[in-house]
Length: 505
Image (tube, rainbow, N blue to C red):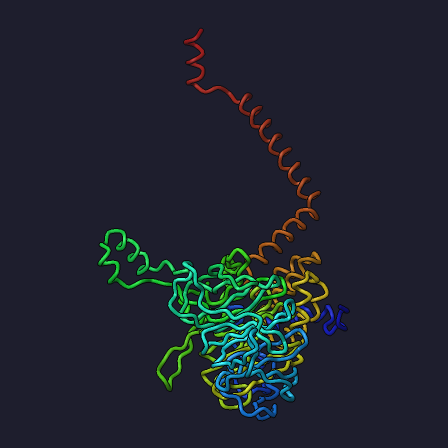
């Protein structure tokens, strides 16, 4: 990618540092709500908008009749969108511009040739590798695997297996990997996602959440060690929260969100094929850092993630039910933008946002109460940030330097810009300036790296002087020691020493 034309001369760098050190948030006036982010002190501050609400689309706009509780969105490899119109028992297919409905799936054909209809479906996944649709037909307690013509290839119902201990089978969401293995989020299941192989055989559970080792949980554990069977049966169980939704990336990693999780580590997870959460050691926080107090309702609202989407650039877009906001993070979990809110205006949602999907520079959000899809488009500021982040994450720190400076010019509170500039200066060998930006970013790790480089550089530049000074000090010490020794030898003996010598004689 070509470097941008330099906007800041070297003489302006010190002025930029002074300007960005002062907290002067730039507020976006394009949205009907307050756009904010979190600064380097983890405080919410006004910010520039990375996305702007462009339009809201209804079923009437698509020419297929009004939506009724759209619960899921999915984009396939040909940029077709699938809207799970749950209340109307159908799947509506449209294009990326949401200009019109191109197809409606409401009646499907079973393998025996009979027709079957959907009943309150809640999720859909379409695989580029298998060329099949995976429909969570929740009301009919089944998952349907269909071709693109609506012919059912496989019907998954409650497994007849000793590993499956649940009384119900209510698929809500589904994904499939490249091998055709199917993962299903089930209603009221806390074991994790139910996993089936490509021929529909139940394999067990995947990506279960953990129970936090709280004081209550620890006390319950020790109580169960000494309690009778009857006492254990009557006691309450501590179980992990069930997965709410998930997505899968090109490399096969599954990302999960848990709406009612009490554990920060389980709110958003990146799970490898072995079921381990790769975010667990990064100490990441997804959603708002603190709870939100609604004075009108006298209630605290905490983040409740209901959906997420991993876009083509590896960015993670998480949808919060409580605030009606989308939180966008880069591939390393660094916050990029926050968009949306609970409001009646364009860009605002009800307290029933249901799905998020992306395509290129757009983000799409479904509202199950407003029965609409809101389309957000990337702003100029968002494009600059995304360019800088892409270069930075690919290791092109020098190329990312000018975009990061432009970001700070527009938003002096954007923490990642300080980190990006500090990294670029560090890799360029300008350790002293890197230390300044790392300090402004409140990044001890990056500051320590820059300080070590600065210290090594200073020692190398002044080695001759340091060595000469050391030689002078050592030589001076030797000379002083010899002089003191001679002086002591030539001193006249005192009375005690003379008497001692007389006794020896």
